[in-house]
Image (cartoon, rainbow, N blue to C red; front, side):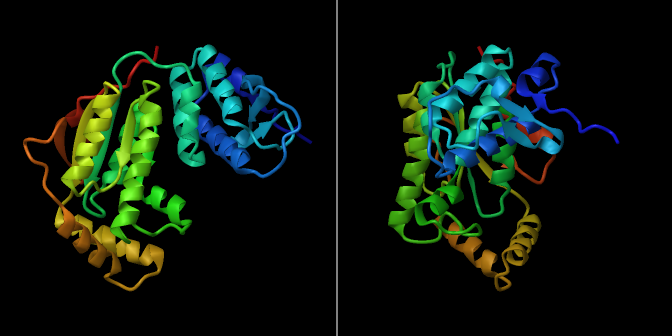
Length: 295
């Protein structure tokens, strides 16, 4: 009988240049689950590359018993990956972990990056493709993506399928305050950030621009849009996905459109319009961004 496939440590993958973004995301998910675990801590320890195994089908195992990990221990692992020469993978690990665990305090414990960070706010109507765009840009920059709908779920402990703009004005203010608070933690550590929300009002775009200026970061607002036929098709697919009455998402999209305030020439920062029905390569070309080198 063939012996079981041996597990690969992260440091072995790093040494053989086989550490991939998919492995990094798998480790981030496992760390986020452990961070949320109520299991008690017994003794302080420091996670390193040699503490983590990534096996076949991206299954993640840890040498230590399954205990709750702290932000400091995750920071130690991120820095260990960086020290092993995988600086981009270290940033990917940090960005994936903070999004999944909602633990942006991690950035306060990491080495600050030099250079000018960038705050990108993606906005537009419902089903305009802004989340798909934001994911692509966040992966290019190895940056955290902070999502408006996720902020709402964290605030109200609701299930997926609930949109960021459903509810009272007060809830909306809390959602955008949560977005900017988390972005501030990353920007202060020299990291670029991608905000994934509608940003229908000029005041909310102005608040994002002010945050970028506070941290000496560049600011870019990207207005995502798509042909009406594409948007309608996406909205109808969401009705089926969420098991709601036909036309529910179209009604919500109309209410969001009614709130939209077109960006004015006087607004701070760069502005860009992206048609998300076009090839992804065209989006990134229009941004003029390249994959960054991390110090």
